Image 1 (cartoon, rainbow, N blue to C red):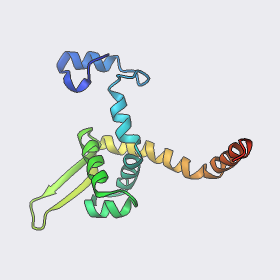
Image 2: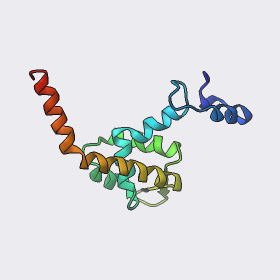
Image 3: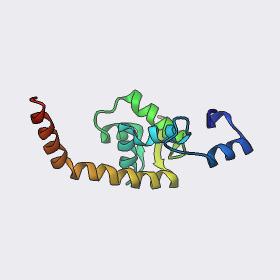
Length: 137
């Protein structure tokens, strides 16, 4: 698979996806994984698990994300079909972000990973200490 899935259509795309192998450098799943498992992708999906958010609310909920990164990540997740953007024709403009069914599925998986990460912090910090001590740091 050397051609990007984004440039394929019809039968070519189906054939490309049938050969998908996440371990292959040119697998189309790599881009999706990048969007879903990026630091901000994970946190945005986790936040949207419970309810819809307006942009400014989501920025406050996901502490540390810049406006630019939030916008870029939401666009990528929307393009991949994980997030639905609902722009209401009112003044001032109102835009709500919610998870699609596919997004809910992905969010549950990354939530499991995020929760495991939180729960495993004592072990991770102990491993770091052992590693650093063994190397005289």
